Length: 207
Length: 207
DNA sequence: TGTACATCAGTGAACGCGCGTTCACTGATGTAC
DNA sequence: TGTACATCAGTGAACGCGCGTTCACTGATGTAC
Image (cartoon, rainbow over all chains, first blue to last red):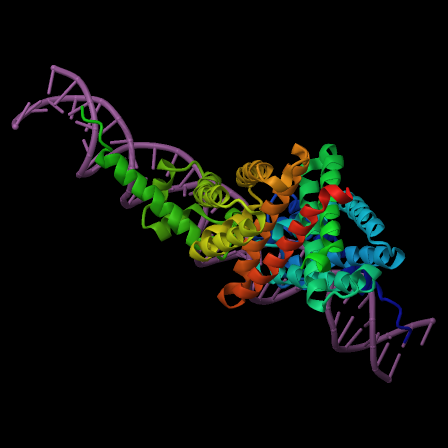
């Protein structure tokens, strides 16, 4: 009667997570479209057939990885937007949070950068949908700031998209730079964002 | 004695180009790391072993495709930079040239967008090197404009990189949007670039 | 110009290998009474 | 609580298939005299 989690379901979820983790490690040096089902199960320590109990194919596993990765960043960015009001502070804090998060989960973000325009349709679409959601959320947060008075919804969405696209560029640049080049990448990213912020401040005057 | 091209070499180059063209078609719906050597030769109408007369492996073919694609765009952008002086006009003309070029050679640019962060190291590096060259060239052209008086070399390079990264984003967005969404993508890209241009105009005042 | 030899782009058969997927199975977990 | 049956996550053998690479080859092109 008691509807606790159930040993069976717990174990199943554990295996599922093992498959996701194993895949992520393998995806650091290859793209999803060349990732083999047997390769994943071998690394995870289960038989190839066990894979089908969790995912239809490797594309479905990829979609699950997208949700795992961007779902967590979503929460962090939303927190920054909620905590900060001033736009200059937001920029600095956002870049900082992203840099730390990417540094903590590099494999996840290498995967996103790699598959954003990769060869697997469903994964591309899942990433695009998540990023679109980000842009809308950022646009909404920007709209509540004093500096955005007089901005059309369309312009806010353009600006939100600009910030999000830069977030993605920054993450993949961070990964390519490695730990040694991190400081330099963050420095350039900050200056780029400041230029955007300045453009934003004069948008209505000059437009 | 006469050192004309030679029938043999002409034919060899023709076969090489056939392989490149066939690969490009196949790469519209998959990424390089999952592209098979046999798949390419089958599409090109030669035997699998003939492949080795031209490329060591599919990664080498990918590097050749990078050069083919970005070499041609390089020339076009350089021409725009040379012909135009005013920054507002440059932005519009550049976006226009890129949109037309991507529209004319969509497969080439889909390939670049896909492999920029893809699973094949040598190809990633070749793309990165080409884009770095672009950024430097753009920075150099910007430095010669009146509006760039007082800008440090470092800031110019930051700005050049910003423009180039936006070029890449725009091309891949154009491809995902398809012909129907092209006008909307170009519209948003123009506004994004205008925001950057406005930021640029006030960079020294506000910094 | 003609001849005899060298080069080498492309051929076709053969190889061993790992792949994705199927199937009937096992045995621990869950459920009904 | 105990028993009898149902569920189902993971197993292990088997399959047909296309892959990358090797090798000796052919015959048109190039070269030397």
